[in-house]
Image (cartoon, helix red, strand yellow):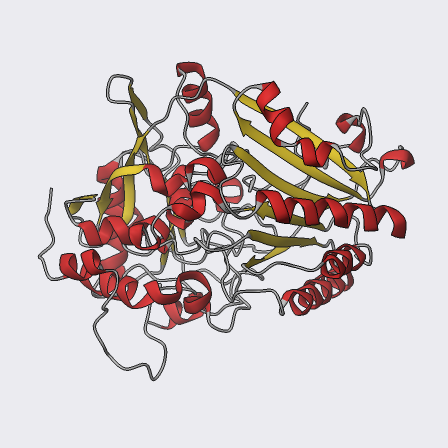
Length: 515
């Protein structure tokens, strides 16, 4: 039986001077002084909005200004709970005229705090409609729809779409960065299922982007990350039908050197059989090295290696597919996941990711688990998400998500409650990065933004960056949509047109088709 997620579970896998301040990589870690809206500005907005305008000091401000990662404490000048698309247009008109920084927020789960900040926050959570067309096997969702609601409806209707297991994550941001789902190894990323997009540009025009219409924008939004080209108002997905989805969670201990050596054999087995080709295309694997959270139950403190399996097929088919794992010694029988305990509040955190293409030797897997055992906090969690299979078979040029050759994605979450713990946590994370350096292919998952990356353009987008930059300059020529890791030229880079992907290059020559 699959365990319940613990403490910060990921999707299983899993604006002049004021604008310059907003672009400081550390700008949200401490609260920023806000420039209050004038009475005339607030009145102008309230006379036009159908949704709610919330200003500092007003009821609901504290709750609506928070972002998921408590490391960042933004103090926006204004928050608008947009009730409809017209409200989004009003907000964009206002921030352009006022020359005000802004962010577009769906679920607010951006790990680097980019969904909050000074200026205005345009909150899309009320744009949460879901329209299912069973005959066409499509679903159209609002840009602020939470993936939990979408997943529940699809499950009840017999349809499937790769989604993660954190219900409150907004589909719009999740999709724009990639969207690892529980079945991504079998069916690709969430963005691979997008049929069409409705996007509001900075000047208020609404465009439709599909494989044939505004193809360049359709390509770029899917992987270029949110708050980049325009506001995604709605998404239409193509759906699948699956008859069965079997799940299992296997556990090995990490408490002693001998246990860690055995767990390293598990990871080696996963590498050899579940991270490359399509021998088991319907078997989706993710791993966590983690501690239990119940101080009153020392038997379950761990640490543990938990291997989660989501298999598209029957229980018997899953058992056959994971037989090499089940045959390995040391698995903890009858593991009671409820005894691990659950965190009541997620403290500040930092998440760094690395894609790995090459194979690790047995000693390398040993070293990784031995390193985890030195963690300064039992909250810190190491994840390994198997790739390969159909996920990697999708053509690299099909979307701005280019990570189609990795064997796995690994990422480390570190947590803290005070300054001393923060220093230790970030030092541990930096040392993990150094440990992974020989295996890292230079790429990172853009949905886990890392403000410390020296060249985020290469890490997130690689050879897709020139085309993405050209799409940005076409659809947002004045760079109204801005944040710390936006699409902008590297200092000193030559101004050369993109040459890849060919269909995007061709589409860039055409004028924008407006709905």
